[in-house]
Length: 421
Image 1 (cartoon, one colour):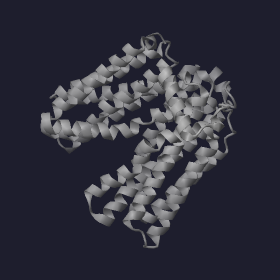
Image 2 (tube, helix red, strand yellow):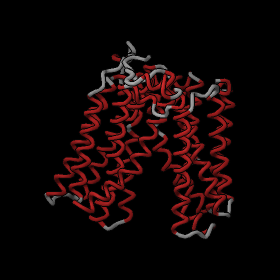
Image 3 (cartoon, rainbow, N blue to C red):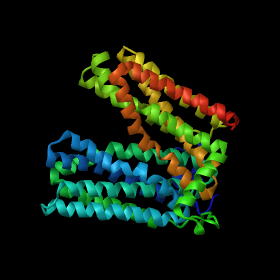
Image 4 (cartoon, helix red, strand yellow):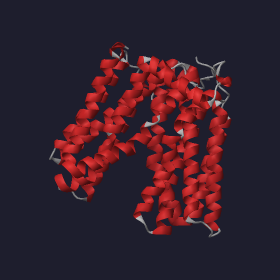
């Protein structure tokens, strides 16, 4: 058992069902259960905010461009503040850092709710609270990811990572739907009051955790933020496995993930699909992701996770390149399902290995680099858009998929030891 990872229903694992077939076994550890409930609440609130903030700014301006700008303003801190947030996660108490960032969300949502119901909200309020909320998200993510190995035993770490990833699917599926229902029934102000309550619940779940043991560097208190950040990069540079795992996280997301932005174009111009078929095509990647997460939650740890990681990430790039050349609807949908399955699989294995391979005192900084993938996707999307305008969407997507796979091959060539892990 690691740290304070309390098991609350161990007999279930031993008598009712084999351990590896119990898909939510990591939730039996009370510490992780509280962390997971806090993450689920936070993600639900953030996806509600994704919908309500865009709807609010569109109602106020009637501008489609403003929808993109307000979303970018909310996401920008993940790219520019994330690295320093990793330093904070390694210097401060991670539980307290989580509660602090969640408190920012409570205050901002309450402020926006009051501005809306009082009729004094202005567009700049929406942007300002979006940027500050993005900073709160950037601060909490490295702390949350870094605390997972301290609240579950090693044999349940992969399961915990999978369930933690599943909160994104829960939030993405339920958050906008709940937000839309509340706005339609009670108005925008009510939606932000509900979001305030959701973030308060996240604080309460996190507060109920016992502080897990954390490893601190004796030199760290004398270092500046920049020195600590440089020390984190030195650690990554000198650890070939950690460096490779980060490359295998960032390269496929930059070159692979942007294809999703062009799915409607493929549906209309190449597959001659209508609205219904386009929706099914866009859902195929998500279906593949859900299948992957369910299977991984039920499976034991892989004997050679490095090999599975390399194969699934390479197949991810290949499936995207093949999708670019497909002209039959069912084949295209099948390839997107495969892409979604491979993406979720390699990301879950990648993150599990990264947490295991990284020394505890560097986990915050390493995770902050890992989380840069969320900021790289928009950049990759811009690159793909420019390429599509010049050489056509199918060719552009095919090139991105091929480069994704070649990047993985090149990364493995730099650290072949990953194949034996």
